Length: 116
Length: 112
Image 1 (cartoon, each protein chain N blue to C red):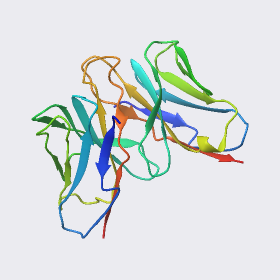
Image 2: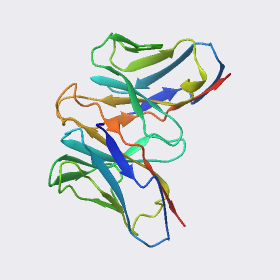
Image 3: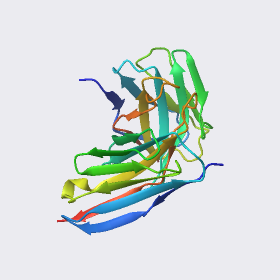
Image 4: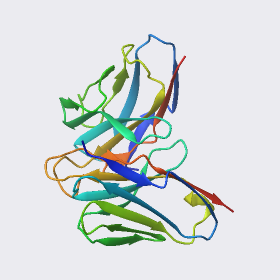
């Protein structure tokens, strides 16, 4: 099946620890994205990547880091510098940027991170 | 900056009723997307709209891209319990602009 997988579904960490969230896609999409979702809020963009070995900051990149070494993978690291890391994290992908109507983004199932 | 208002924030309806929700923006956009998010899951794309005035259906769902390109509505007819979830509108200005701007969502509860 083609799709986007995120693991784990639930993640618990102690305050001050870095944690890496996995995102893998087999849709052959060029673009990938990370969003953060808090209760009652829309999705806020953390980082995005147009192509392998390239990524850009989104609206709330502080305290996060990413890498894009493979087309299929776009892991997100939540660092200890992120002041309020507890949230639901969503990964998405799209065919490519600037390819209307290909801007539709498809989402993974999400990872709920709780920092204790 | 761009403002996107989605309303209502929440709705409580009886099974079988029709539902309508809408989004309005302060700027013109080229693409309107409607997503549904089940509890604890990622959003799923329901309908994509690309032209002003476009009316698109997907089963019991109907969505329209406003003529002014600043608004869109989503209708659900004959609601069923599995329609429960959060519905988001999302906008893209097109061209080389990658970003989607998301509304804050409409939480739909359907009483059987």
